[in-house]
Length: 132
Image (cartoon, rainbow, N blue to C red; front, side):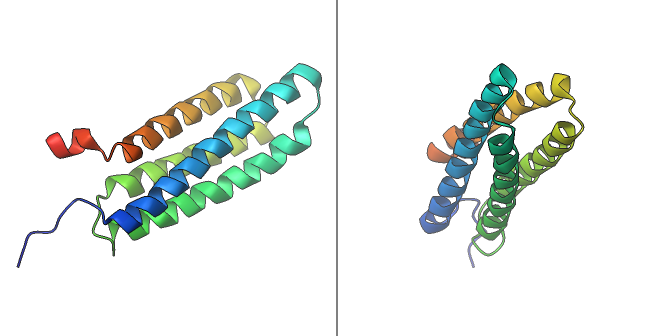
């Protein structure tokens, strides 16, 4: 019997790439609607709708990451990153509802950066993980 592998099956990895790509796009759209809202006092409805969309996308990303990890035989890192992003998303929603702009904006920038890094990592196949 062979040792368990940390590599994911290519089909599962495709779903994870899609999930992280949609997540990154949703965060980017949130940045656009936030800019509209801060610049012109409009855009609160699209930004609010986008927050719910991003939360749902983050939950779906976590589900896909768990499927890649447990039955798919992949690394648990994907699920940990997805769970961390969901925590950030939840905190971001709470900060937005409390109108704490001084914290809400930097956390949004952090979320975009984390999502882009995760997207690049997933598309490059986690080469740093394989060489370590």
